[in-house]
Length: 157
Image (tube, rainbow, N blue to C red):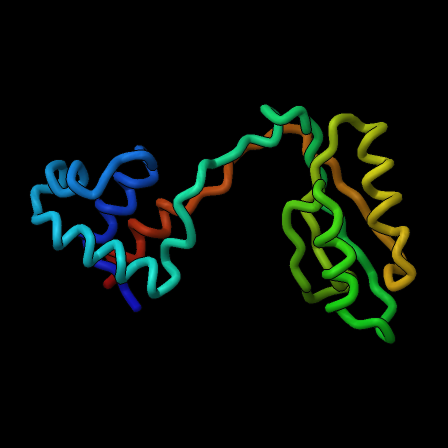
């Protein structure tokens, strides 16, 4: 399940220029087009590459507030119904079951602090959620990233 230096270079190139084609990748990486296609197909098949869509900035969409919300759920309902409820709320970007005093961790966005209250009210409006605790992010210090892991995986293989 490891990747090598060529895989790492291919992933870095695709991350830097997501609209680049396979032929241009092969030219820049100085390998055959078939090699690039085979590597890319293998990375997709293994789940290393999950998609090729655009990276969307929520601030650019008008959602300037990011918050992290922990939820305590009623154990009799379980996680699946809560996850289904959260999936219906567009402002819930991610949700994870977690260990510790809370049961679920969500990353949510809102247009403003007032709008954040609306989103939280919608989140906790489900009877399977007993309590929520919210932390508002003030500034993004390190954006979501995976390329350092790609480099580390390639060098430790």
